[in-house]
Length: 353
Ligand SMILES: Nc1ncnc2c1ncn2[C@@H]1O[C@H](CCC(=O)c2cccc(C(=O)O)c2)[C@@H](O)[C@H]1O
Ligand SMILES: [Zn+2]
Image 1 (tube, rainbow, N blue to C red):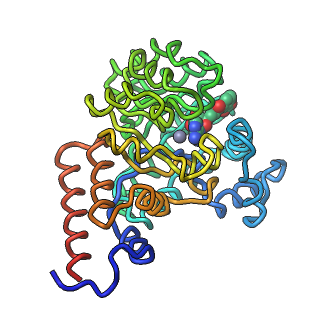
Image 2 (image 1 turned 90 degrees about the horizontal axis):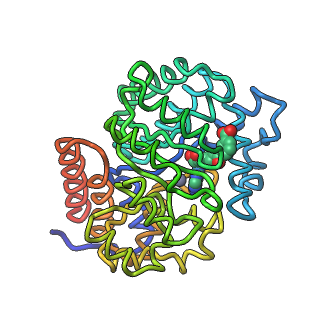
Image 3 (image 1 turned 180 degrees about the horizontal axis):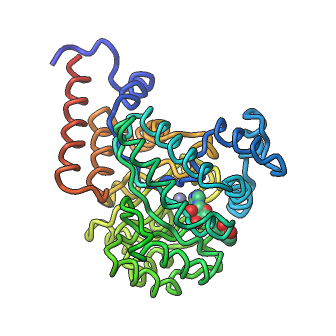
């Protein structure tokens, strides 16, 4: 190995390392990934919307007073997606942004209920996402997979519709691998969704609900017990329950950690108070994700830089985090090995430069 001319821990150097690092993204929302350019293009197409068309004005628009306000703004962007062509454009452009960050594999959370209840034909919706998925893989080499999530606050009607769309053999898209539950947690107990998760799991889908983002550790227990969660979206409040942390570590249930999101929605007060270090120290498999990156003024690269600071990691530590995400993904064994080898080759090359 050659001498390092630059301190390998210098943040600027680490940022450059992260920018080229092959990565997997496991927790990122479809509509929440719309870049300012896409949001303004859609807002211009649909001028009756209250969403600003000027990308600069979007920065203010995407400033949230609390989680409920975030969901309100989120739904105003959902309202901009009105045609199958809007769906295809959004999906393909999201893949382009992921590819730019060297994301090789992403599980994108999609809420099909929000589109079908707004009148988009279900067949056309599935065709639009699948068409974009195939084009993205051919054009950018980024593999996309889908997680269909229930918007919990929309009630059991939304749960039924989401489950139907995810399990009907005539509709279910080839790229679908998992089943989730999102939106507010307060007043939306997880156990009521058990029958829907049972059906999705029976149809071969993995269970990946949000839990412990805006409520306490009992919600994470409920997701594990009733929804048979294989990974937990956020799981932030798990840090309040040492037994839960031990359980997550022992059963190798990964957490999909999204640090900047937790600050932007005010689920956590400051980055320095984020429990990510407690997760890592308890032996929990931590994965780094971006959630709704343009809405939170972040991207996956920035989330890795934040995690490196909070966990005090050098390049090898950051590469291990990237490998955690590959390991926790629903890729097959050969696909996981391929990306992990790519991460190792890149890291060795970087440190030897
Ligand atoms: N950080 C997050 N944490 C949790 N979820 C997040 C996060 N980021 C994005 N989401 C998404 O927000 C959706 C919420 C949608 C919702 O509540 C709702 C309620 C009533 C009607 C309708 C409708 O469409 O008619 C929708 C979730 O399904 C999820 O995919
Ligand atoms: Zn989320």
